[in-house]
Image (tube, rainbow, N blue to C red; front, side, top):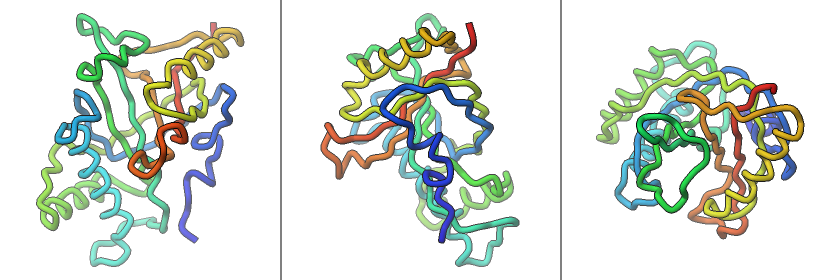
Length: 214
């Protein structure tokens, strides 16, 4: 059976609907950075998703081609993730103005297995560019150790997240933790549902905020 990160690491991908503190180790991703409203039909964000999924599946399906990756094992491509922030005068600000999505900054990401090296990643980018004609120049192999966080499972529309986030952040503060946003510690979401196939009220999204002990 292919290795499934959601099943093997349930504490990271399937948290309860009640907030909890979790420590997130270093992981690596295929990532694309950008800015703007993620809902724009021809915007940067949706173009980034096409590139990310193409690279992810090129690596996963490399087992069927001539290029061999050291340490390869078959796996289920993990869910899409996103690191999000807004800025004021060049400084990351906590919280979100959901009415101004055009000011969203984001790092869109899909987790990659640890066996993927920079060499393997570069091969996948070149392969996708050649076979699919996609511009993969902005895709990067992104390694990140998130550290201590508070997280929760949000059920519902993305626009309804603020109420869930309020509960999550209050839990952290009431249990000896404070929010710790910075240029490298960001609002993080993991998308467990396909919004094209799932009713908004049934969408499942892991929401995660960086924290540190008070």
